[in-house]
Each structure stands twice: as structure tokens, then as C-alpha cells.
Amino acid sequence: MPVDRLQLPGDAQASSLDEEMDAEPWFYVGPNDIFPEEFLPFLGLQGDVKEIFLRAHGDLLRAAFWTQMQAQLRAGEVMDVFAYRQSKRLRRNAG
Image (cartoon, rainbow, N blue to C red):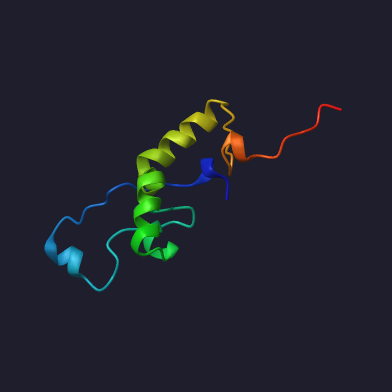
């Protein structure tokens, strides 16, 4: 799904302890809703790898990052994402 179509419901808060503990959900989750703070458990990272990921990419686990990305895309900005540093990328021959 395109990033600009994702919904970030934000920090929904129960209005009471009873509502929070109820067996039925007290909030609606739509088909395009994402919860970046829940990504980490699905990645299955542990130990040092988890810590390295959090230091390098912890921003991916915050809704603010995705909201900013959506705003940039809607403003027409094109973002380049590179898997490797410039020094590690293949180079084109000038011939």
C-alpha cells in the first residue's frame, strides 16, 4: 500500500479503566490503519541486532516519522532511498 494512503490513528486513549479492560475493542481499526510502535515485535530482532536497528532506524517506529513522510510525498517531494552507502554502490562505466 502506498505510504500516503496509510492511516495513523495516533494515540487512542480509553475513556475509563472499564473500557480499557473490556473484552471487546473500544476503538475502530480500519483496513489502512498502521501502528508503527507495533512493528518491532513483528521484526523478531533480538539482542545486539535489535539494539543496532533501534539506533539506526528507531524513527521508523514512531507515527511522527510516517506523518512527515506522507506530508513530503503530498507536497511532491521525491525521496531517494539507498540500500548502500555511496562507497559501496556499483558504479556505472562512463563508456
